[in-house]
Amino acid sequence: MTEDNENADVWTDGQTKSRGEGSLPTDWCDQPVDPDLEENLGYELIAWEKINVVDDPDQVIFLPDSEEQLRDDAFIVSSESAVCDLTDKR
Image (cartoon, rainbow, N blue to C red):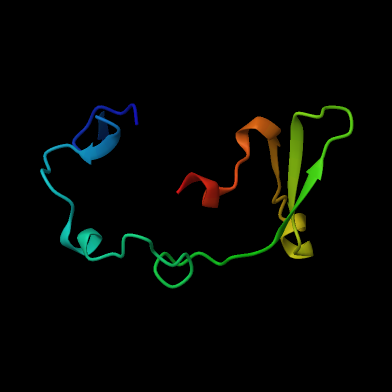
């Protein structure tokens, strides 16, 4: 968010706030505090497999179970220290 225009967001006290707006849009305020990923946010949940890299113990690879997504080059390479279980972060 480095663009300096009227559509850019600014970082203030740990929250993002759109420039020129003092409050959230009405439709955003109507959303549940703990939204359902599929119903409320439109995400399609799929299973991914976590694979540890033999040569580098701090690196992991995530691959989707779907062959179609693999053909579309869907994968994630990450350091193990960057991975966490989101249920632990509540």
